[in-house]
Length: 110
Image (tube, rainbow, N blue to C red; front, side):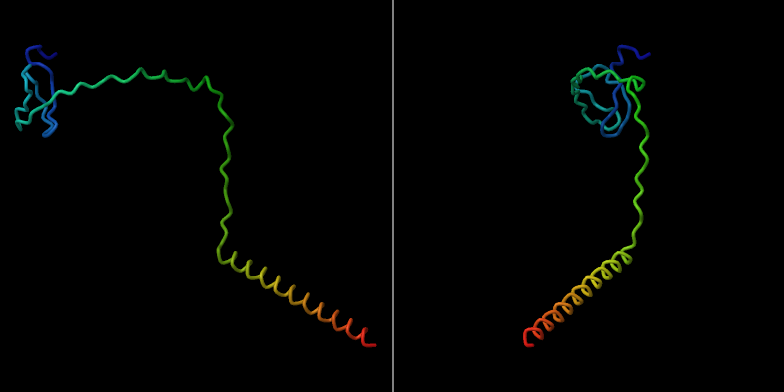
């Protein structure tokens, strides 16, 4: 146990040497001669008591969500196929409309 005449054990902030302040003011490090200023640290408010995990009900474990890996090439190919199918459908509709108009014109001229 430390003797009271040695003062408080300190640690230098510049060279990290441990020393006793010998109850002197200003406090000076014996190794590097750096002056040590005492700063009072305010005590924080009392902390909340730790909760016991047993008091809280545990929920059922949740299964991880695994998303399927989708290749960008496959997506772009599928998009192109959908676009080409839509274009073909539009072309077919236009052909049918032209045939209907031609039939209407023929019946009107007869």
